[in-house]
Amino acid sequence: MERAAQNKTVFDPLKLREDFPILRRRVHGKPLVYLDNAATTQKPNAVIDALKNYYETHNANIHRGVHTLSYESTLMYEEAHEKAARLIGAPDWRSIVFTRNATESINLVAYAWGLRNLKKNDEVLITLMEHHSNIVPWQMLRDRIGIRLNYVRVGRGGELDLDGLRGLITERTRLVSVVHASNVLGTINPVKLIADAAHKAGALVLVDAAQSVPHLPVDVIDIGCDFLAASGHKMMGPTGTGFLYGKPELLESMDPFLYGGDMIEKVTMERSTWNELPWKFEAGTPDIGGAIALGAAVDYITALGPENVAAYEDELLGHALGRLSEHEWIKIYGHGGGERVGVISFNVEGVHPHDVAGVLDEEGIAVRSGHHCAQPLMADLGMDYAVRMSFYLYNTKEEIDLAVEAIKKAKRIFG
Ligand code: 7TS
Image 1 (tube, helix red, strand yellow):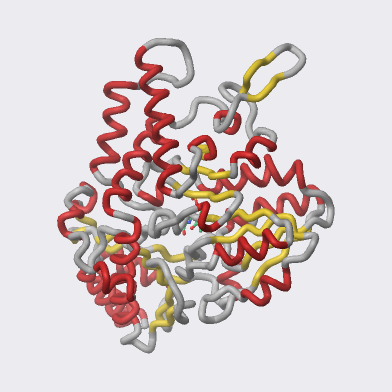
Image 2: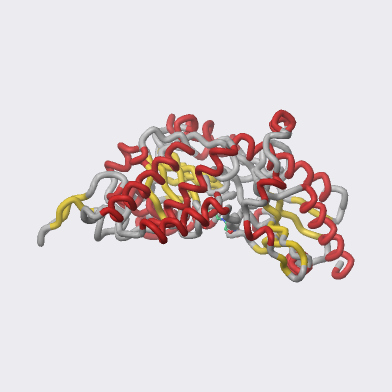
């Protein structure tokens, strides 16, 4: 909340909303209120125009031939890597591998690092707070090579059990893979501290930053992580975009993930050698236009300032928590203090979460109801489903008030 107080007037959300054409649309006759930003975010004109401009004036395949369009596309595609690198404080743009999404980024590490470097009884430590995309790849390695998969527990207030975490890091731990900001509870985990503890034991650290990079200043050097996975589409970039950061020396030491065109240096009938970073990990024709438009999204966030985005979302979060807490029949999960991103999961006593979401939809309000791809966490919290509101920089307190009114309506109808 302190951050918000210092930065209150930094940007005008009403002005900024004009950059997002979709926010002008109506749903069931009501103005759209989009509160499902943890799933994917809306796109500003700058991103839509970058995509359109790419296809209208530059479109060609990259790293091929000398013709002008291919040359331009290649430069623009490489520049998008540089922008992503700068956003997360990576000194070398070649440590950024473009992927389709955060899920693919984590799978890249599981296949290209895990399959080659882990052996039976090695340990991977994750947490109960993970999205399925940071659980299932490690279960795959457990089933294929017999690694052990351990989970750090989560307290009722939504905090990771850090003492438990220290106890679970052993001399067999090879990787600690942890979510930076929870997509269910909003909890911001102390990833720098976790990275220190892991490194002391000789383990590597992967940070799942799908919900942090869009909302907070993130610096890979400050955190000290070895890998960081991010989603482009959760930070206003096009769907089908994401990236993996890896320490260059680690990426150099790894085998490729996918094999084929563009990732090779030389191919003979007998064998092949690999291209330099990051192309070694970007096999086949990538989403060139998407990546360039993701670069435009990075420009948009950078111009606003990630610290200002965080401060404004903190204001929205404080407002929403205050409004929801006025009703004892609303149960909020995991907001026991500490730093949070703008995500609130809750249930309404006596009303199924899908019914809550259905009533909100009739009012033009988009929220997610379900298991949020975090079933182990949901089970640990003693539920199957919850409603989730998640904010972004174009949301307003008035929208949150409309959502609270619609929740009250759902309670009146179903409760
Ligand atoms: N990690 C976290 C913490 C996430 O929230 C998500 C997506 C992912 C990884 C996977 O990202 P993707 O880009 O591969 O889809 N989370 C959600 C969500 O909460 N609702 O829809 C997608």
